[in-house]
Image (cartoon, protein in one colour):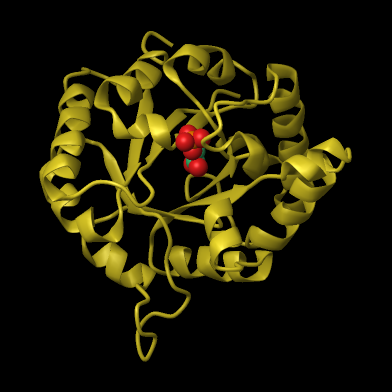
Length: 254
Ligand code: PGA
């Protein structure tokens, strides 16, 4: 089974307008210059820049999305942004369940699943994040924790092409540390088996599973060559066009 690779950037709470638009323009320019790219590129700027970045990258094939969404479509929810509003801007997707949202805002698997369902309702693609803490890994619970998160966070109606899973060990995010390739492959194979049990083998075989957590130009080729790794979710390195593009370029000629 060959699955198309997805190179995704999560800008987090970074970038003011001018720098954000020029970063997006630079990536889109390089992507558009490829005649038949064999991989997809996704960028998730903060809400404040979504409109400008969508406008700046129109027609380039780059996929733009948000970093979170509300469950409801509209109404009395001060400060929240619905997936329908994100879609209305011309975005194609949204990230849900990032460990920083789970930690900073107490988001549970149940809420993450509701958000994923809301995103699908609005016609957005959704990247659902899971991953264990260092304490859980050291206690030998990494697979069990991620298995639970998948069961709790992935909607029953999830389809490949609309739902992407990102495995991001919490202890690898922003730390420069990564699991060994063997650990990443073990986790991704386990996730695919869990998704097979949940959604059936056809869906699980087609579903893209990303790795995230300190993906950099110097480790991307190895991580992205693992059989069950179908792309990367990149934080820090997505803020520099050269670094993000160096990661994407590992997928040229593949
Ligand atoms: P990082 O972040 O690449 O800076 O480790 C990844 C993420 O949180 O998505």
